[in-house]
Image 1 (spheres, rainbow, N blue to C red):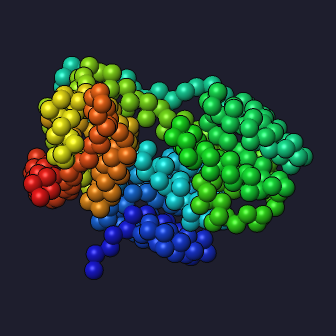
Image 2: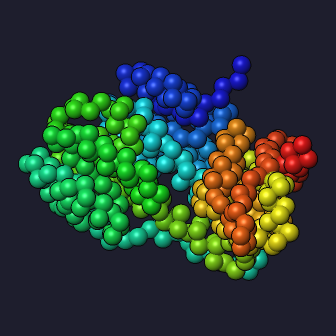
Image 3: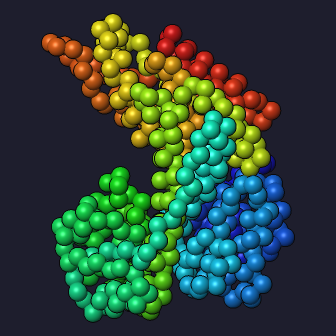
Length: 441
């Protein structure tokens, strides 16, 4: 029976790795555990591992070489590597992408894994876009991480414990802004840019969770890491906190200096992720995109899709493609005849571009036909993506002319995965055929 593990855990014993692996498996992130570097490297060669977690507690300094050895064994696939350890600058300099202090809750690990894996895929995608655009005489700007002091918003009443953490952040030269109420906090969040948020649970932990939930409902604030600082553990159960979108949980039982280091590490990771997203978004201003929708043109998409397929095979990652055709419904036929569908297409295309991840490639293949190339995405996940986009657009009403009811655009969808030994063009043909069959039926 084949193993379909996503996460590699490297640990000498099961004291921390056992509960973590069990929790990740239960939440859908299948794991495989290796007891040392040789077993770990063997697993990387055989499996589509997306990230690794290395338990450094009680291990000698030789373990600091693990991260670079694991990354080299995975190349050209980028492998995020997380360390389970107390905060230590030496760990970051050894190639680990993130350090998480024990105990590590599975839900907390998943939030960080999702973020790091997405960043790895986005960095791979940017490298490919550099090549595709260079072939057409366009040079994309390289990702540039913002410099200067890290900006941290501290939300909550000025309790002594919370003030101690704020002061510790300031000692590490972070730019700290305080907000005593949720109203003030959201004013700051909408007016300024922050790299991390710390929320004091205090006497009203549920209000703190509601602030985080509000951030996660806002697309602009969604990715900002948020640490919940509790008076004592467990004022709020870790599982409940992470379900609400908390990135990390801490309390004064841990020294404010160590907690400050954790906050700043999250903030630095967020800046790196923001830089790669901005670089990918700038492709839209290259002059090569479809003028009406801002998406890849048919020819540009075809060239990039071939490069994506070659890279997916080399990196042992899945690659899925989707085709979305405007469905031939009666109201759409009327809107098409009156020219109103043509007027709606730019808005529809722009919506598709906003509804995909920065690392995904969205294209306009024809007047009413769109396509997606989704790197590191399985067939079921790609279908969910296409259906989600179609559902959002189906909730939008488009003008149909004076005196007429607005019309709704629905899609016929086709989804295919690039299989071993199959060309990307064949997968795209299969997806297009599925969409056409749905339209015919």
